[in-house]
Length: 261
Image 1 (cartoon, rainbow, N blue to C red):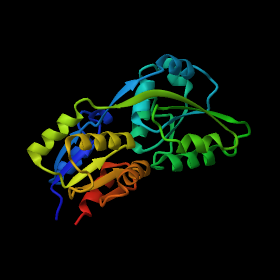
Image 2 (cartoon, rainbow, N blue to C red):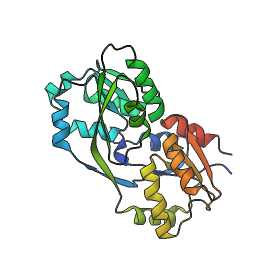
Image 3 (cartoon, one colour):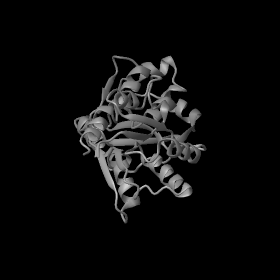
Image 4 (tube, rainbow, N blue to C red):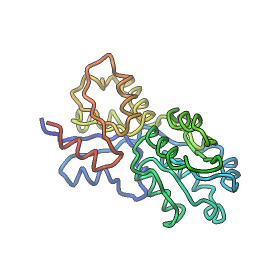
C-alpha cells in the first residue's frame, strides 16, 4: 500500500532555519507529514567548555551532533573562533552548522562518513602521518555512544578529551502529543526516528499510552546505524518492518519512503 502519512520523531530545532527540511521535502512530494519532538535538551558544563575552547593544546574539534555545536556556540568568543582551524563532523547538517559558527575558511572534514565508527576511522587515517600526538576535543551528549570515543582512545597517536556538554530528557508533552496525533490522523504509514535516545523516549511513551510500535502495520525508518541498532535491539522479539537510511539526509529518507510498496 502506498505511503500517505508520515510521523517524524525529531526536534524541530534541529534545523538552522525555521523550515524543517524533512517536512518540506516530503510534503512537496505529496505526503502528509507531522513532526513530534521526543526529547528535550539541557546544556551542562558550560564553564568547563569555555575554558577548554581557549586552550591552544588541541589539533581539532569533533562534533557528532548539531546540539554539541550549539553548546559551543553559547560560550564561543571571537578570539576562540580564530584559534580553531579544523573540525571533524558526523553528517552534512552538523558540518553546515559548524561552518556557519566558525567561518567559511575552516576545514570541515568527515561530513560524508555518516556514523561514529566511520568518522573515527576517517580521523585516524587523517592524522596517521603526524609526527607528534594530536589532542582532539570532543563535546558530546551525556548519553553519547561508545563507538567513536573507544576507537579513538585506543588509536596510536591520539589523545581524546571528552566533555559532556548536554543531556537529553524525554519531552514532557510526548504522551499527549502522540495521543493527539493518533486521534486526529490515525496510525501513520511511516514512523521516522532520528536518534537512539529519541526512539527510547517514543518506545516508553507508546507503552504508557497503549500503542504497539511493532504491531501496528507502520514502517519504521531510522537515520544512522546506531538508531537502527537501538530499534532492532528493543523490538527483536517482535515482528516489525524497519528500514535504515544509509546517509543522514532528507533526500535519503525520501528515497526510502518512495521505495516502500
